[in-house]
Amino acid sequence: MEVSAEAGNACAAEWLDDDGRPRRKGTFWTASAHIITAVIGSGVLSLAWAIAQLGWVAGPAAMLLFAFVTYYTATLLAECYRTGDPDTGKRNYTYMDAVRSNLGGKKVVFCGVIQYANLVGVAIGYTIASSISMKAIRRAGCFHTHGHGDPCKSSSTPYMILFGVVQILFSQIPDFDEIWWLSIVAAVVSFTYSSIGLSLGITQTISNGGFKGSLTSITFGAGVTSTQKIWHTLQAFGDIAFAYSFSNILIEIQDTIKAPPPSESKVMQKATRLSVATTTIFYMLCGCMGYAAFGDAAPDNLLTGFGFYEPFWLLDVANIAIVVHLVGAYQVFCQPIFAFVERRAAAAWPDSAFISRELRVGPFALSVFRLTWRSSFVCVTTVVAMLLPFFGDVAGLLGAISFWPLTVYFPVEMYIKQRRVPRGSPRWISLQTLSFTCLLVSIAAAAGSIADVVDALKVYRPFSG
Image (cartoon, rainbow, N blue to C red; front, side, top):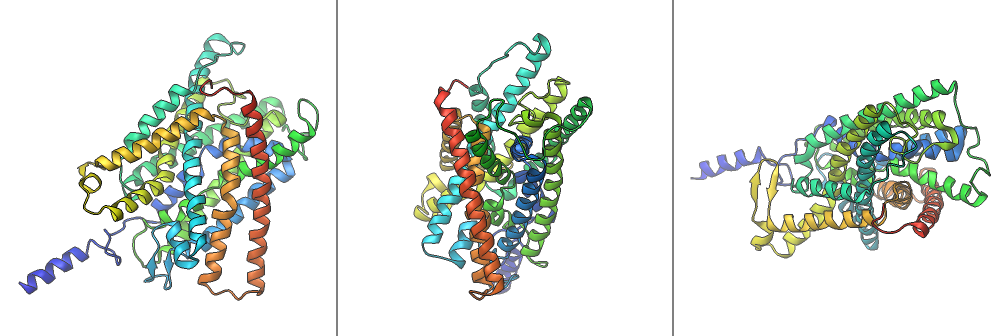
């Protein structure tokens, strides 16, 4: 009996990690796919507009600086997945767990509010972006048939509802480990539409006979006041920050990587290096070629602002790819919210069949609570998206609000605490200077985005867009 029990325990141990949870299967490649899915998103479409607000000098320089800061702080954050020894220390399953282990106190509450509010905001932003792309598919066909003089107006509301229905279905997939395939598909299509946008920008630039734009950005006049120029310049920083946003789910992605050796932090740092380098190249190419093609008239969404009209079928392919990508990206960003609420519910009511009883159907795990809670979440974000369908402004505001606390402040503070960096040392001063500078950038970008949202709300009627 004893031998049998020991054998059974040994067999079970093969399927469990050091924390007693099912053995993780993630690799460098799946982690990279998750990051690329999260990073190369709808944010790439607003980069031509962002560079137009900054000009040929400041625009690319700002993108490179944001890329460097995002990569550097992500490497600091990756070291906080385990508390203590990088191979055997206590695991932190979420971003908030890492803050709790390293900083504790009120900072945990602050982190939770900012992180989950940002994730909700991303869900709303992606719902808006997907509906814009679906509407653009219809408009592209209309322009092709009736000519560019036809306004080809339509509402984005039905497309948001359609996107929400799809997300209700996919939200029944229980966790990150089960959606690796969705992230890979989303990563592939993200390169597809980015490449199409890049190709159309190059073609338009050649057709123009040279690069448009200026070294110092849009000048006053031509419908742009000095106040608008200031707000738009600040919002551009928020758009760039939004395009690089993924630190708020980095720990959750790292928790899918299989146990050492090598340590999860080393694998995550390598995945971050590849992902940020890859996305930066794409961002620079897409943003710069979009600005070169349209100059000061660059639309806030390169593939749906109809700077391009033909070939209409290629625009359709690009926008279909955007929608497919956003279906996956929505899940990557929302899974931490789903998991947080469900863990709390399971801890509060451990014996409730409403919460714990599941029916497995392929990758789906159906329970009454999961179906009710996740479907309600999707419905709420869809309704809010219908009320605020301003993609560029929402993207800038989300990037501005989340950039400093989630991408810079908490990684820096946790790294200082975990590595015991002496207060007042050159390294401590450098890290705090970086954090303070990024705080100023976030405040400025948020101010610009809020000003634009206020202007848009003055003339917008809910559910009419």
